[in-house]
Image 1: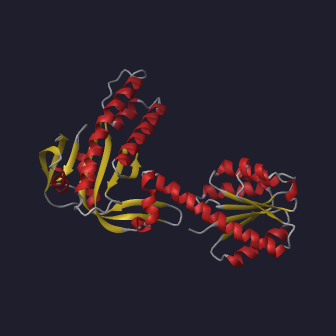
Image 2 (image 1 turned 30 degrees about the horizontal axis):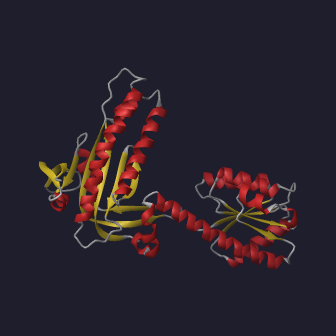
Length: 364
């Protein structure tokens, strides 16, 4: 990802000289300039709107007034809490460093009293450090959306697990049956739908993480999770399939409690009956798994026919039903009570006959 740096200084000669130095030292950086607080804020806002946010602001402290740089930092962090900033000033003794760091979120401060090229070199070194720190925090934030924090050590020790590779995994899809009708019934109170979705998402994340899964994505009221991405157990995916089904059964039970609580709320605002339930589809198979990214966004996900099959199985499930493919059933049959329910022959874009089962309960 190309780092984007904004240089803010009211003296054109200074900002152009710093830009030239940084460009020579870092050909891969994209540099922007502004002459003050207002112009700098405008650049930050414009880049956010383009989905190309500024990574680092390098700003003089004293411009139109003695606190211009701090005002810019305040505006910048209100627009983008993740933005990094370095202050440079010729009045270092008059700057309250604790205020700059704690209140305004400055990453560092550089004195301008030292000779120009030496100051530029120090700014460059600290800018590189700030960008490395930002990359690290972004990576942690990115991973925390998908992985239980307990697996961070595993990823740190072996980053190769994030690379795109073919693996045998168990893929789970969940979806709320009756959700579209619910939204229509409650269209006058969208905040009640949003509140439900937040609690539903939090519940899904907690249960998936508890059973060692990876949260792939939320798609409206749909959830996709992967099991077996990090475990690398030499048991042909049996433990991961069992973990996935345990998660599905726990989610089914927990959803009933969540549903009851929210129906109690929703019925205060509508005379219509509300019927929703959680459907689930699970399949075990080979997929390409890893970090699939663009220059601006990263996504850890799974790709391939196995993912499509799991999604199709879920789309046929009824409320409170956990459906699994034959390849999952063969791995979990010793642990769960299972019954065969149908053979699918009309799955869109997936030719063949597929025996589908439903999981009733654990055997023990």
